[in-house]
Amino acid sequence: MQPFRTFLRIIHRMRRYPSVCAELIKTDMSTLSNSSLPRLLVIDDESGICLAVSLLLQDLFQVVTAETAEEGLARLTDSYALILLDLRMPGVVGFDLLETILSRVEHTPVAILSATGDRRTYDEVLQRGAVALIEKPFSRLELVTKIQQILAVPAQS
View (cartoon, rainbow, N blue to C red):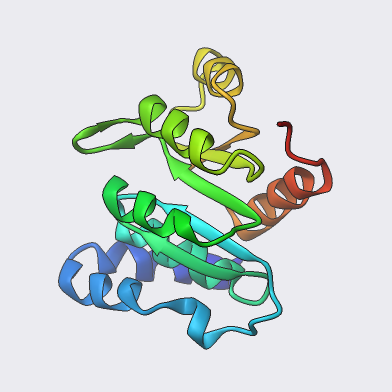
């Protein structure tokens, strides 16, 4: 548990230096990864979350990140095994963005990342077509377990 706490401290400190963190995030992790790994798209306005997911899953996925809704929509031209979407992003209604994504990539499952894990949000996320709600903060084990559960079940069309 100690290495994970250290990792969280590093992420917390990186919030103090957003420009450095932004440059790290802009590195296309897929070029650094094994091209045979499945691709995962993370759309989250918090660069620390994008970096954390990239680092936590780098041995399992080619992780591609987007820090704005526009950037995320632009990256939908590629195929992904899974899309992780932040529900609350500046300048966009999360559920509208979810519907747009689902209309463009019908067979790609979308899971919502959210700090709001109440039952009402969970139910609405599923009603709107997402396959899961992943609560922030999450551990590597929680994230990997949830993704494995999602990918074990075929996406509904």
